[in-house]
Length: 176
Image 1 (spheres, rainbow, N blue to C red):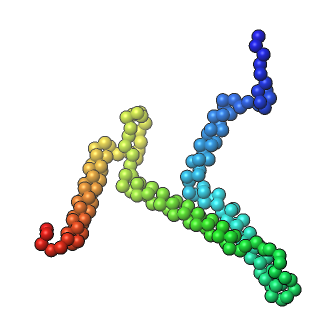
Image 2: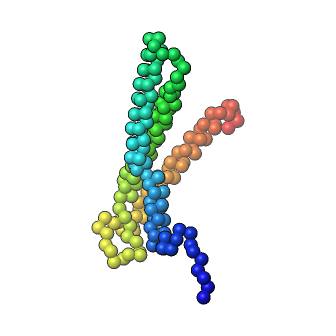
Image 3: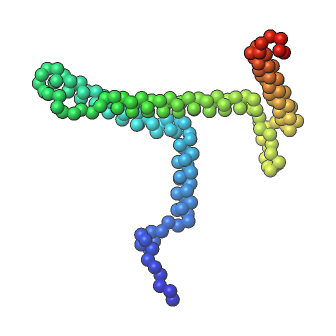
């Protein structure tokens, strides 16, 4: 019999495959949440509150320190925390929150536009037994796609005409 080497961490402390899968799922969920602007916004709010509290505390300390100096009670030998650094931190968090809200708004507007331009689902061939009440027939789907292609071609042609007009105005007369 071969002797077993002791594993680091002792026996019974090794994660099982089920535990490893759960950890991977949790990490995947955390990475998914990092991309969700609403979740990120909710995570930044406590940081913003803390930053605002810190900003107000530093402002009051600086004000008290400057008042004592102005009254001649104390000399300016003591160091105080810098107000501009805490204000910069607060503004950085505000900017991050604004970006999260703008991203969430863009996601919502894209979702609304998607629902408006393709409101119904097309039944898939993989699940023929399930009947979707909101689904459209394949012919209706093709008609919708053809109209979208036609609209895209019209936009493309309009952009080409516009670019030709712009390019034509930049050239001296008589060259066209």
